[in-house]
Structures are given as C-alpha cells and as structure tokens.
Amino acid sequence: MIDLKPAFLKKVKGILALNVPEFDVLVYGARAGGVNKKHSYLDLVVMSDKPLAASRSEKLSAAFKAAGLPFRVETICWASTGPSYRKEMKKTGVLIQKALKK
Image 1 (cartoon, one colour):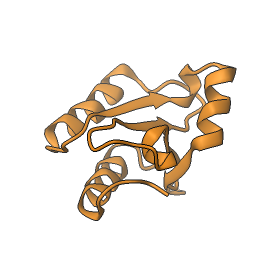
Image 2 (image 1 turned 30 degrees about the vertical axis):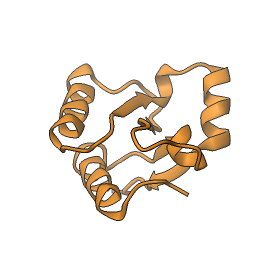
Image 3 (image 1 turned 45 degrees about the vertical axis):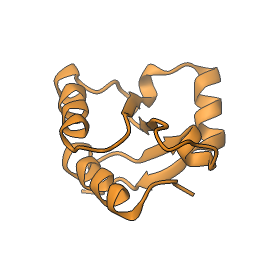
Image 4 (image 1 turned 90 degrees about the vertical axis):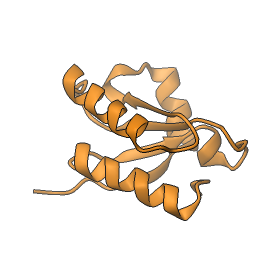
C-alpha cells in the first residue's frame, strides 16, 4: 500500500510518466510500509540497469520540487545502490509505475 492522498498519488504518477516512462518505479520506506508521518519523505527507486544521466535525474528532481507537494520526494537509481540497500528496497518496495513497453 502506498500511503499518499489520491490527489498526490496522481500527481506523482504523472511526473514519473513524463520523466521516466520506460522504467518500473518502486516506493520504499515509510510511505510503502504504512509507518509514515504526515511529512515523511516519499522515497522512490527507478529500476534501471544503468544510472540515469545527471541531466535527466536533475529534471526529475526539479519536477517534484515544482509540484508543490507537502512532503519531500527522494529519487534514487537502482543501478547506483549496493546489495544491502537493494535488499531493503525489495523487501518494502511497492510498485507505483510499471514500465511502458515500446
């Protein structure tokens, strides 16, 4: 379960669809496990095999900052993480976006 109000969930999904449509994206951490507080971060992992280009990652971050959400959104690329972090993300992760197939 992703702990976001429907309007915020729709906004987050829209940003992901515009910026990283070709990747699965998981929510992990507090907002994926139902133990969040009102201002808990939304932690997202883009499931790519290679790190996103810096310009693309910056564009995604800027889109979330401009969205006016009442919480911070943190994005990370799967390829940039280590084994122990991946294990934790897989354990708590909830799919928020399924990759669009071309």
